[in-house]
Image (cartoon, rainbow, N blue to C red):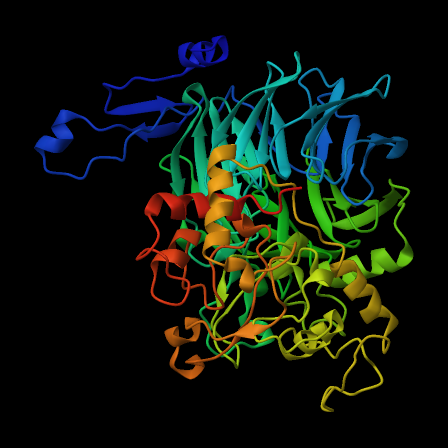
Length: 611
């Protein structure tokens, strides 16, 4: 056992023989013989005593961090690969410091002297000395770092969104001490003593990682349809957690723009890790239609919660006692970070796609200043295109602030859902990586160019369209490229999404055998070349899962980044790649190929591309 784990074990507050433990007003139940004797259902084991709420400090990952001096504010500039240091209360930009690519969150060490960022595109952690502006880069050995928090001992915990793990990093060495496996797509983090709460971006699940044992103690669902769960905020005095999320109504068989997604705030009781469904806040009714709740800030004295809606560029202010709106504040483009100062009198909003900080006086909920904190290196076309992709406020893109491209394809990813309500049958959401190499598009191969996304904008999102020369009621012709500068910018931006560097988990021998099975089974007949597609449609029997699609031919999907695109087939009928080769259909191999070789084939496919 490492010294770190031993220290954690010694410090853990465990009393396994007790029926009830009280810590600072928070009760936690443990099973005991008398419970079984009475025939009652025991409390799920293990649960652990929460830290004393009078002494415990909490830390949540996000794009803003405030020093203990209440004067140093640090912001992560996701789209400019930098952090900005701001001095308060004068709200003066001190310096913008380059870090790694695509910093998704920032925090400060306990002494307030260093900023730490998780750089998603790089797979690294940047540690910035704020006095000297010197940057130390720590490779994490994982895919898509997202959230980061740091404890009093300079141990950083980083969610690896693409590796399904938490990296534990000693900043003093600096080095990765270990990685803790967690369920799919970890994102937001909240640290409370020996507890690390983890949100899962696409499933909406929440995991409790018990740090003394470096393992997931429990994972709960906040609803089968919740998604885009990027943050978590704790109220330790009341034993509650708040999660900004989006409900994805994928089972709806009659999709309209306003029945696709719904903005919500879910609440979790920390005492037993239980979702308080009766306390769920539907923001479209508590406030007004908003898009993509992304971050929250809690005033636990007033019992108000501030919600940054990244898709509709506004802040919802909700009274938790009544569940109704106290205010609604338009801010800058794509607000992804919120932070209250120590006395809750000022709210800071990080507008990611504007490089600005909105400063709101909470007494009267008015913006008193806007500070531009980042000197964007992006072209105007790229900024406009990103705002179109992530936003739902442009009437040409969406109606009523409901839905954006990013709701299903955030950062070019797949939401891992099968949407039932399309006219040509259920459709599994694909990833958007390296699209220029894989035309035609969609499962039916009816789009011959990326500019055909104009059809989805008009049909699903309720937008009037970016091609203003052709009214909504008039059928669109082909090609669509070249008919709108903004549409051309949007499709050019979508084409920039690139998949992660894949780190094969299998041994070279297994990968080699998998490649051999791939060739022996002549998989390359259809899945050819570096992209793994012949750019044709084929009837391989997968349409038989739905009556209306029986015998239908589908576009040959590429074979890269398969780890991020489950489930498989057009209708998601194969939950795993192993299912692809064991279920009925033309891909079935289990009758002629050993399970060991199928496992090798799966390992090989999951390693693609092997750059």
